[in-house]
Image 1 (cartoon, rainbow, N blue to C red):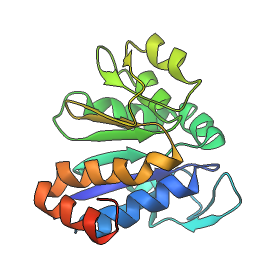
Image 2: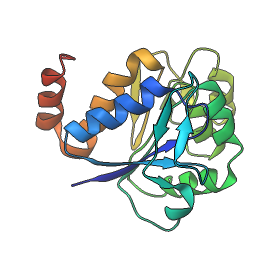
Image 3: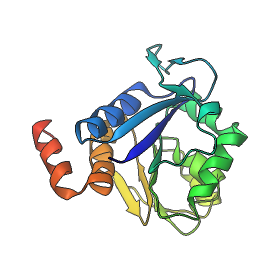
Length: 184
């Protein structure tokens, strides 16, 4: 069973984080919510508190099958200032393991240096930061280029999560989950 980390920074977009975790868990993926602080209770952008499974400090040197970043303006700003997270994400550029970000969070992938010459999308208004990071910006709702997957925002979180399920557990399981949840 694949194992993934979904990183939660204070001010994360709740819809994105919970949707990603929910869809992937329904698909049989082991999802661990990782707090970028030492506090496991992480408050989102809309004052909803989500309980993380472990703090970032417990993930150092652990190998997982994918890294996923929900967006949210304040959460993304927090992630952009987290050099340990940037360093951890940078290691993914040398692997074929999926790395994914939604909403404003693709800016973090750009800062980590893994969007150079990669097709990507983001929340409207964040495009300049992706372009600065070398990305080829598109306006599609979900974009997969190699091992990198990006998406636009809260309304696209379900489709984004289903694309990640497809990559991690295959087309048949992702389609089944999508149909069961009435996405497809």
